[in-house]
Length: 356
Ligand SMILES: NC(=O)c1ccc[n+]([C@@H]2O[C@H](COP(=O)([O-])OP(=O)(O)OC[C@H]3O[C@@H](n4cnc5c(N)ncnc54)[C@H](O)[C@@H]3O)[C@@H](O)[C@H]2O)c1
Image (cartoon, rainbow, N blue to C red; front, side, top):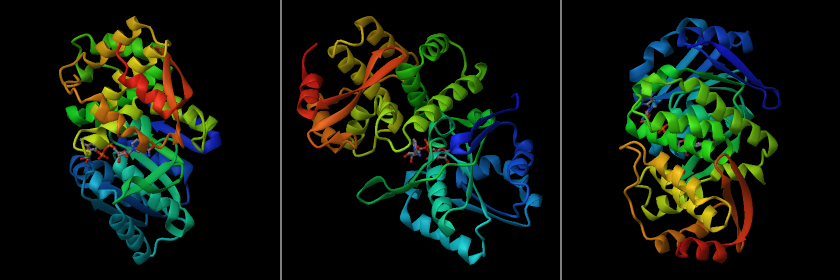
């Protein structure tokens, strides 16, 4: 893995791709005088990568490693309170460096803790899942879930430094690959035809996951996300495009009461939204088929569910992109290009239910 650095000065975010032995050196370049470090991780990441964490031990005079249980259920108010209390109890000051090391769950709850402890301390993300390396670590969104729904309490707090390391992909199981690939395919379909062609070459071949240059694709994806977030930091317009596959995907997740993985739901959503884009007379039938073929290219990615579209449309009204009776809906024009349609919700539902 080649070490390299990319800066996003407007967000004050630096992204460094490097091996774990360089983490402390890279942190010191950005934060030469910090002495207090609070590192949040989960049990799985800690047991797989505690060697990486050990490298921090002698570099800060005050260091706490807080390990919480893995999984979405940990992204809650009770853990948030525990983290904040631990920071206060151990006397961490406003000069604290808050480091998250884990997937999107750790990044989200850690990011929120860093954004509100003493009204905000500096944040570093070390994302360890493909999804967090191309998506959740970027853009500054933080959150915990409430009993009423996902991500209902949160804030915007950009990390000053993001350390990327493809070694974490070596311990991915199929579930983690699905979560990450669903978002990567979304970027390719909506914004980057070259990425789509490269993913096609890879996924439709019999190449192994450890034989490809993930760094190149990861960089394409997070640069896309950062440029869109920069254009639309408050999610008023273009950031909605990052929701390709998520209108139908979220409705399906809700229908299945969150027992179906987010990644599978989004993949299903991309296929259905490609169909809607074709019915809108934007996407050609040939390109729609290429998207379907890409998603069905590998056994573990294949979409086997056939939920009724009526039951899915019944859940669309909960979508955050709804504005009264209208909906902001991302449409795929052609592979690699997309735009937002402001459409009446009942018209969108009719389109979804209409025969081909
Ligand atoms: N803030 C944002 O902009 C944003 C964007 C997308 C998703 N999210 C959030 O991200 C979360 C999902 O993130 P996720 O998919 O990374 O899930 P996750 O953080 O729950 O991680 C999934 C599982 O993988 C394990 N794990 C982490 N790294 C590993 C590794 N290298 N090898 C093996 N196992 C590893 C974790 O312990 C966990 O059990 C959701 O809560 C979602 O809301 C946030």
